[in-house]
Length: 302
Image (cartoon, rainbow, N blue to C red; front, side, top):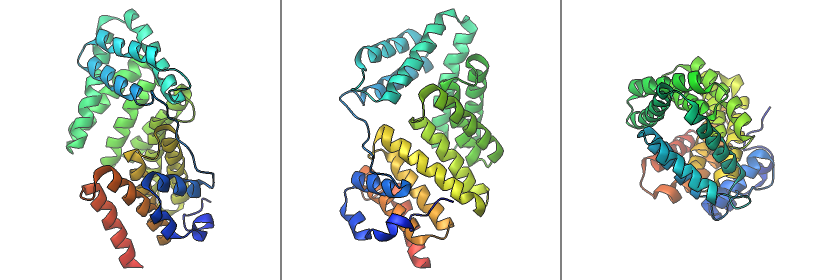
């Protein structure tokens, strides 16, 4: 059984020492305590920020039905990204994208149109989701996933990405069996494509952990914590402790530890989430308020 944050090393660590650390160091320190390992240094380098920007541009251009311009962005990335100056997961992701483009000329016109529409649908689903238009977002994500599954196959990283988008919406609409199925399939495909460390693979772990935490009862909480811990490790290793998603992961771990009736462990996790969210968003933000509220409720119940 997984240990809570309050057991083992955390129980012997002063909470004042956590508060004295900067937010990224705080995340790294508590992650080490969560997993029982030494602190992790995220990979970096002068080109670490290049690929996410070029990938977003390529995806946007494909959705806008400008495939030649999208391919050109990938070629720019190919010319710039080199080991060891870019993280391994980015190099593998770029290689996967280039492989998809090698198959593009051989596809029928209708297939190319469908794949461009799928790219547009995924982006539209994200926008609708952000505005809580969940039914519309679900239809868009389901359409994109079905298209990519039919044309690219279940092993495709692009199919897995659409599956994760649909899994998130399915969770928010309480379609839990579909959430678990999609996230599990995406996990297999992403690990096969990118290896054991990738941001979207972390997302798949988080989705499975969230489903276990919210819908599978108290006996599932230790397994849920394992999923969250592994997701957190992946995120720190791939994007670093500064990423906003790290704060969300710690907030969810706080909620999980509260469900496990481990208030000290929950407060440790909430404190990290609060520090990171304040660093990212400033002192006045809904995300900051959410963590403060969770801490107040927990403190009030002690």
